[in-house]
Amino acid sequence: MPRLRRPLRDPIEPEDASPLAQAVSQRDRDTLAMVTRALARKEVMLAFQPVMSAGGGGRPAFYEGFIRVLDEGGRVIPAREFMGAVEETEAGRIIDCLSLEMGLDALARDPGLRMAVNMSARSVAYPAWMRTLRRGLKACPTAAERLILEISEDSAMAMPEIVAVFMRDLQKQGICFALDDFGAGMTSFRHLKAFLFDFIKIDGQFIRGIADSPDNQCMARALLAVAREFDMVAVAESVENARDARILAEMGMDCMQGYCFGAPTVTPPWKVPKSAKSA
Image 1: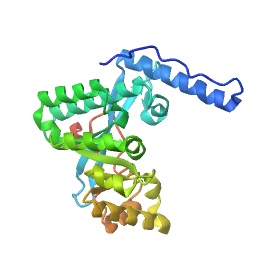
Image 2: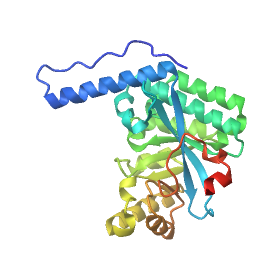
Image 3: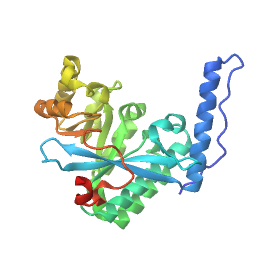
Image 4: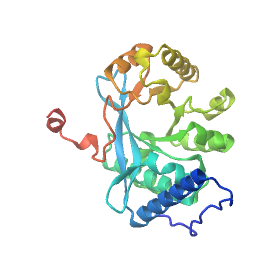
């Protein structure tokens, strides 16, 4: 596992910082310290959630692996609780390396598995991340064609030209890319064409409650049309109930992901016996 190269310093706070700003800063420091301790102990894992094919007869098209860390009390902490505090630090790069390493290991263990793992555009130039990828593909050459790398819209737009070149190089090896949280940011059509993502994952704010929201239906159709225009597979995120799933299927959505189909679980769902699933 790559190590932190230098101690992580507290951000400098202006003397006139508001009590709220100071509280937020202290919370971020505490979160970063907790994550750093978890990384040092290697107490990290992936939680898996199915991404269902809208016309696949109830079978997952692939799984997404979400990074989790354990705090000192052994509680499993989801990424949304800490990524904001560590995204721009070296701890964030180490998390990306570990996510990739665990995802590649899962792919090597199960030849029929297809999996997506998240990464930040900031890890594109992080040498340890690329070493992790090369090592994993050398150990299991077929993993490349079953690996999907997810990059959020905001992250991709932070350095679009660099990300586009990075994607083209890895797509030549068979790796696919997904644009996560599409619609939440300000991706321009010029950059979207240059990126050539294989999947677009439509942000949950346009999906939740879509059965009762004409506005969300309009937005989802527009974003789905963008996916069709650029020949990308459209995935609806945050699908929480059967009514929303039915509307999305009728709309022509390719895949769906959310609590309607299963919550993220640290127990690999593809290893759970069918009898246990139906119990």
